[in-house]
Length: 89
Figure (cartoon, rainbow, N blue to C red):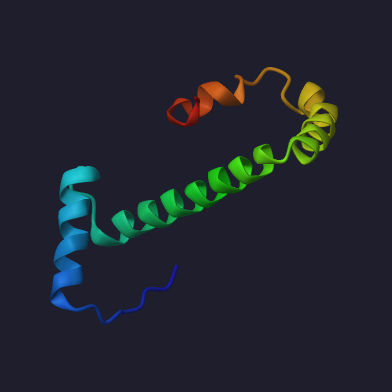
């Protein structure tokens, strides 16, 4: 993968360095940024699921559709609730 540079003000760079140190066991800043982006993506997905669940008809249609593939595609895999327990209510 090619590398590039970015211009960040020193305050933002220091914030990212602190997050890398405190929350990600001192990983390099690029890895901390990757993790923050991934966290952002997961949060967007979870927000969309919450929106979907708020519409009972849409949620029922979604569940019916996913049950068609979940029964075969998930053979031998752990339940999805076990994979991300922090999102279970």
